[in-house]
Length: 395
Image: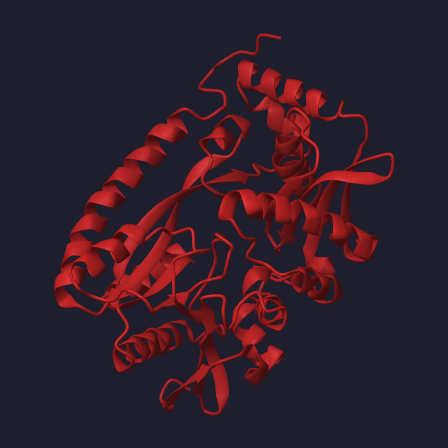
């Protein structure tokens, strides 16, 4: 009941939170699909990060998850970490850290409520149905209390929902926007139906790329559930290492993470692999939500023209259409996605800054940044690949 006192607990591991309690908030399955709305915030995914050593001591990501209880029942949860750096977040605050430290402050450690290493959107202040207002308020108060008690520079909630962002602003948190490119399924019954909605030039380009990619000399296969074998993870690990070394210097995830995912989340996973003569040469890893396909990791051991676009974008869209999913999130950044049907969307983050002067400076910065992001989204949308008005085909 709303009148019950709220008990906030800080957890150094999800080992001390039952999967049932956590997922009752993170994964209530209101639409009855049997799939998690967002697999990245489930107990099994976040626990896999901990068990595999991908987060924890020595990684700069120390778990400090929050739970809120009322009447002895967990009503709200948040995946929170003490951060010693700003790597693996994708909402960039390096300039904030530099400015704060130039002024004599200590920006790290800080609190981060996020999914490590994954710029996926979704709920971060997660509650049981009916506890949204009380639960979110309790979690924010808990974060601020932890930050204050430990003298931390701030607390950050990244890639949250728009609703959470609106509620957070009412609680006094600073609001930040960003931009990603998502593909939206307009009830297409096939990939060709999607292509029919595009301008002639963009449609021809995609067909050309798909033909080019599929001529690499092998086969492309989509695998999920028990069709995924340990050997497929061996290949995906090689691909991930190659991409991680080039992008980040050192891959964030350990090899053990993929082994655990195979045991606990292969039904939540879609691997798209290209093979030649029985040997995988490139692959893309996706996580499957109840309404969204989340593209995550890509890599290759051979370069083939347009194969990246085929595995990461077109195959994902094709699969989403077949499964009746509403959208595909293809990760952070990348204006090249625009020509391939992915449109700009606004992402949302919330920030608490302890120092009043620094907070005011960031607040002014964010006001200007929000306006710039809004203009970028508007301009980029106008350059989208879809037909305009009564535009006719020229094929």
